[in-house]
Image (cartoon, rainbow, N blue to C red; front, side, top):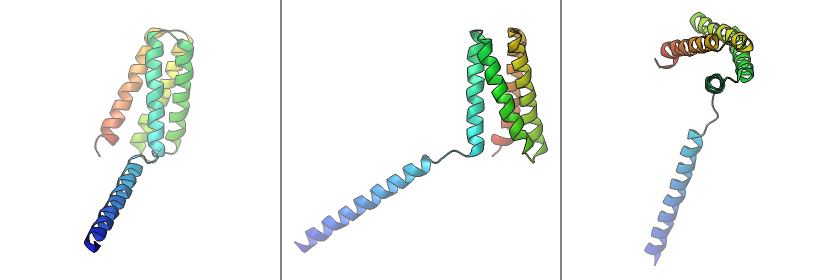
Length: 133
């Protein structure tokens, strides 16, 4: 009887420890994103929205998102210490403002060109900083 009780207690203890470990692993994988991850996710959202809105000629929405992108990247660039990262971030900010101006004028061709420039600059930055880690 004692052996059965000890065996059941040991199994119960292992189950509790296993459950606690699984919860801890799950919590670690659901950690809060870093500020740069939040910023990049916002940028991706704006770029996806502008791509879709340009296809459907929703220029007012493109203007709004481009201005938001320009403001965010401009503010972040001010605090960057790496000159190359700062330059690329400011380039995105400038291109986004140019995109907003083109969308205001309902110039679809120029807006698409500026959006392609933004995507290319994002790709350069990712290749230089994110993908090399």
